[in-house]
Amino acid sequence: MSRPALKLRSWPLTVLYYLLPFGALRPLSRVGWRPVSRVALYKSVPTRLLSRAWGRLNQVELPHWLRRPVYSLYIWTFGVNMKEAAVEDLHHYRNLSEFFRRKLKPQARPVCGLHSVISPSDGKILNFGQVKNCEVEQVKGVTYSLESFLGPRTYTEDLSFPPASCDSFRNHLVTREGNELYHCVIYLAPGDYHCFHSPTDWTVSHRRHFPGSLMSVNPGMARWIKELFCHNERVVLTGDWKHGFFSLTAVGATNVGSIRIYFDRDLHTNSPRYNKGSYNDFSFVTHANKEGVPMRKGEHLGEFNLGSTIVLIFEAPKDFNFRLKAGQKIRFGEALGSL
Image 1 (spheres, rainbow, N blue to C red):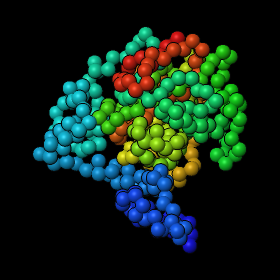
Image 2: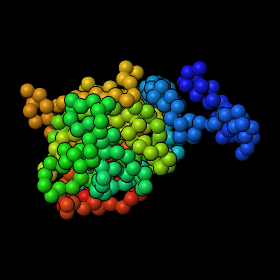
Image 3: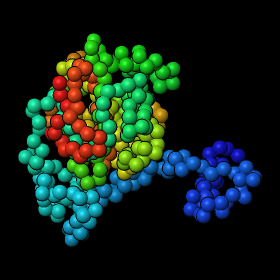
Image 4: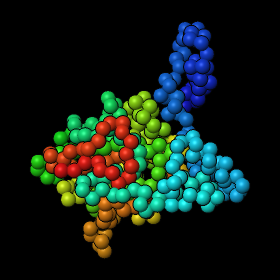
């Protein structure tokens, strides 16, 4: 019998193993049966299919009389502040998707002009600091590989090629002598503002889309599953700012298969035509546009369909300082750090 078939048949027993009192299924171990781990069991859930179904449901137009009770329940559950919304009238939003992607009043998020890097979104700071040994912390004590997360160094390499050494991969990103590589991870909860913006003045030259799983990215799950961000679907934008390399990665999550980049009409996330384990490259540098896509600090960049995660990885001089505390809440436009 094939391995997938065996795994499928072990599902019911594994679920019972975790639900029934300890030791209830112990006799099965005598004939060689072992439960699938909780992590493996969770990874087997068809999150991409479920997220596509949720996306379709979000597009269904709600009857006018049903909008207020549905949205009010969501507001109460996740603590949404509708006083910041550009349109406070709940009847205005025809479906859940429109409500999730609501815009804010212009004065709701002033952009800090004193610091070189601002928060691109509302959310919670999971981790930040220097990148050491080419490993990035998704939460304290749980890391993932920088190369696995961003992909191969050049746009012509294949994922099946042997990985580059840590020093050579880091040196490819750190382009200026005396600079260091930094990172910051921001988790967007379901009740947060779902759009994200440019965190600094920079130029986007390349997009890499990784189809993948759509597991939950809440902090509890990030502690549980190593390299969670490398398993999940994500869109990596890379380019340059005044100090060298700069990247912003939008990481998908359960029910967040839709990641939209406003200036990239060719991007289609959580599509069945893409297989997990692959990636798709697109360059914004052309014969007609040799610079890429210039972005101003605070400019609208993209949006999620529900909560998710933003990861910034960039180079900067050694005297760059974050003005953050791990676990703090932050809002779009507030300072992340500066020189």
